[in-house]
Length: 195
Length: 245
Image 1 (cartoon, one colour):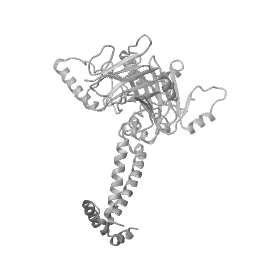
Image 2 (tube, rainbow over the protein chains, first blue to last red; image 1 turned 90 degrees about the vertical axis):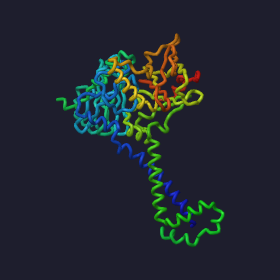
Image 3 (cartoon, rainbow over the protein chains, first blue to last red; image 1 turned 60 degrees about the horizontal axis):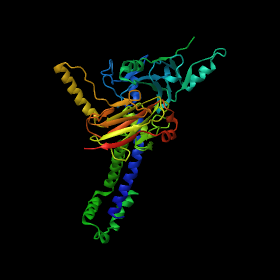
């Protein structure tokens, strides 16, 4: 083989290798990243209520706005709150009191969002969800009292860890404070044994 | 395998064909021969690692490479908040920390060009008009890539200003409209004017700073998220260039 041929062969090998490295890197990024939303939200694990990570500021400086948001650019009219959960400690109950504003709640796992609900699904002004693993769900079914109807909305999470995102739209600048407050006040507590 | 390669070049010295090759290539080849197999292997490894990592970095830097549904100037991204989001979307979200709009929450549409396909120019005036797909609420915002730096500058200027004359927050320029606050005509349609100079009606100031302009339309609580076919039927707002200096 000529030197040039060897050089071309080496280049081709390099290009094939580059393809492999590219695919491997793209697939590995979600596992290696430290700035992803789940890692950032994990700091809120101990809280019982959601934490405001993006405040609406269309009507001037917001009170109690997060100092340094880790979120990239968001909708300026939407307040975003997050609340991390870890199902190892038991099922997690999310309770949101809905107001006059549009509010959406989404559940995110390791691989992205897996469930979303809006305030239109509220019953008497409250959206209530219980996030559980498959095992916890089976246990809850097995130990259910047949005479008593359970009204919980149960959602089986694909992974043990995840976070809940709450978005509240302030359609007018005057609704800023209301939206920020709503995004901050969703409770996410570990659902202990009822009895 | 490698030993064979070492043995080979001596026999195929390529002297006859070498004369026809450009001198530079020949010189390079001679240099390569001196480099030997180890050098070539190292070269291949370095090329693979460098190129692979660079392209991975480029593809996951911020804007979604594919998976969009194009409608005139707009591109809808229905898959970014779904469970079957592609690996590039996941990597981008992991790097940026983005909390995407989930499938049942809403739909994100972005536009980098006007309806005739020209890139949005910060010195031009644009008219964004028409109707939006059905949704409970929507917001139309304009953003600029290099806004972070410009923002920091204006923030610094603002704090400086408040220090000197004690003026309160004068308010940052408007960056978007919500469906509630936008002014509409008798038929419920709207027209937003995007431009650097003040306009009557719905004026959306062109953001300061450098970098490309991007229009973002977010539909909240929309049935469109389930199937983008509705988008084609109902239509998206048109973006027309009105005049340029």
